[in-house]
Amino acid sequence: MAAIILDGKALATKVEQQLSKRVETIKQHTNGTTPILATILVGDDPASATYVKMKGNACKRVGMESIRLVLDKDITTEQLIAEIQQLNDNPNVHGILLQHPVPEQIDERLCFDAIALNKDVDGVTSLGFGKMVMQEFAYGSATPAGIMSILKEYNIDISGKHAVVVGRSAILGKPMAMMLLNENATVTICHSRTQDLPSFIKQADIIVGAVGQPELIKGEWIKDGAVVIDAGYHPGGIGDIELSAIKQSCYAYTPVPGGVGPMTIATLMTQTVTAAEKHYLEY
Image 1 (tube, rainbow, N blue to C red):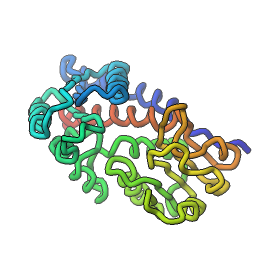
Image 2: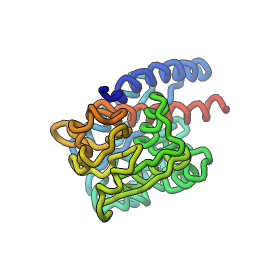
Image 3: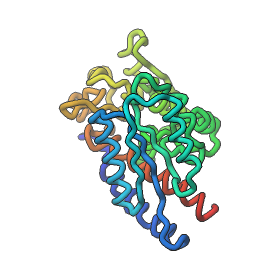
Image 4: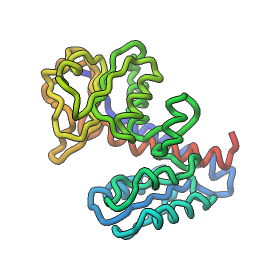
């Protein structure tokens, strides 16, 4: 039997329709004020510029506004933090996104952690991560939070299942593992130093590819009936997992493109709207 396609693009469209209604409610309560997402792009990396543009377009689709800050690639950590602090202090800005990666002279972690917790709608701060792990309110890191929304939408059972996350980045692999753990999965984290990676993947009921290497995870390693989440995207429209080899044998999978990516942006929009609701509607 063919696997279920976990259609992130369709879900993102559904989420945006719901967000448009929530934005209208905010406008009605504030005489036309809309949620505002501020995006910060450092340098002129074409891929990063494209991602920022996509996020700006998503804001327009749901009736939000965006402020786009483009900073020189030679900016210092201190200068970038000063720009972030201005946005923290601006009551009209409800969410702040610092596009990753930043040029190498910048201390990215220091800059992420300069973002105010109530405006950390991309879920990148250390404080937000800690609160999420402890199951206190925080905006989750956007990609893993988007993945959790996909699993929920398609009624994928997580509790008691063995989830294997391949990748340990601060904004994807680690928060992904903790979100799955909070939903009662048994979680194994693998990475570039893991010995005998196939043996771990073969045990997975849920496999998340978040390692950033094209088709590193081979289809023959994945057991029949597994749920396959591919968070990678590389030139040629391939991800971190050899999806072509498992489409008939797994239970469900996220396509590349059209799976995880659209829900990352939809989650960012959702969390910005929530931040605006907390600011204006006080609930």
